[in-house]
Image 1 (cartoon, rainbow, N blue to C red):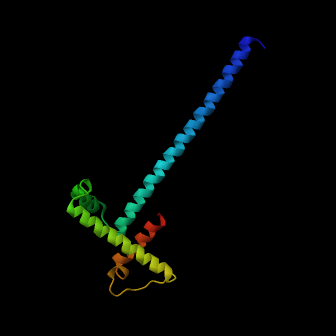
Image 2: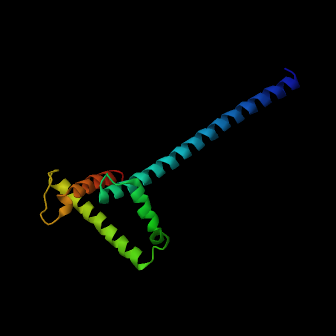
Image 3: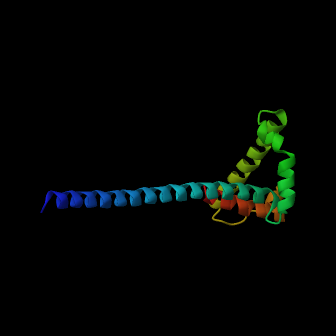
Amino acid sequence: MSDTDKELSHLEKLEARMAKLRMQIAKEKKKESAKVRKERTHRLIKKGGLVEMVWGDSVDAGLLVGLLDSRKELIQNPESGQARELKARGDKLIAERERGKEAHKKDGGARAESAGNPATTSTAGQNAENAADSYARIH
């Protein structure tokens, strides 16, 4: 084999190796992209579950977006008194829901009706219960 043939063979091997590396890079980029999409989807599902927990599944999208837009200053200024008050209220609702779910698990899945808690007897409460179950499953 001549020196020229050896050089061509070596170049062909290098090109094949580069092609293989390009494929590996593309595969890794695709994997990372899928991971980012999955994380985003997870966040969206959790937030949607929280909306459904409070308002049920029949909330109008325009109304929801309008409400959120009208209150965006709370998100932009989370240290304001009103934002802290709303966060505490929301955290309390989530914690109550989690406690209710734990109690539900402990009683073998039977639905306990609580006379003093409309969230366990109302349609909205049932929607909140279902949404919170979904929320918990993704945590």
